[in-house]
Image 1 (tube, helix red, strand yellow):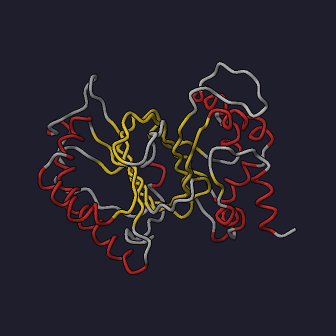
Image 2 (cartoon, rainbow, N blue to C red):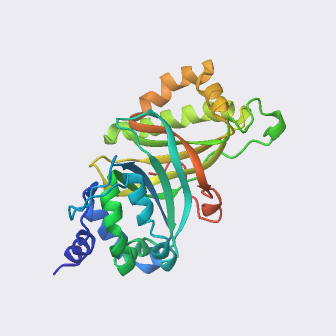
Length: 294
């Protein structure tokens, strides 16, 4: 049996009804040389069934979300040294195909191999039927952080931000999942357009208290729907009012039409209410790549 076949068998031991497995990326995760391996951030987009559907046909009154909560592989994650660095519920999906996603989570694994090792653990396999029952669809993106624009020296104080967090309008995370035009002749131009857009948008965002929580390049999609993605960006807004102030800014809208819409071939944009948010701290010591690398 070939090494690739062994990897495929180890993954397909699980009955996965909620997405397509990329066995080539699975092989990379499993076989990256130890001296070349390192942390990987797995970004999870999750959409639940209305009612859990167990493959053994049992009756269930659980919702899909409740079944996934029963799955929660905390023991398995801890055993391989992984940690959940972001977790939140999607309040609004602004862009992207429907139906909307329900949750976003990010798990940092100490190595690529550790992600594959977790799949082999007995307690993980024993609990996986709950995820399979509850999850209608998922996209799991293996990511690496990249260098984003530094905060300006004149960053406004919290008290100076026009739309501060309140009990009625608390902080939110806006998550962008981005695909550039993959044609070789267009890719470089797409990145240039996105850079031009972000140079303008960052200035407007900073004035409204926005902070970059984490920007990532996508190195592979272990489970998805066949589409290829390039980046995931997490931007922290002090409130939904701050988000609306940024997105309706006339200067930003003009630059968006000229550059951002030109740069992307596909995207999701979601307003997420964070329940766990350690995403920035999770790669503070990582070796960040150049922001134009893909």
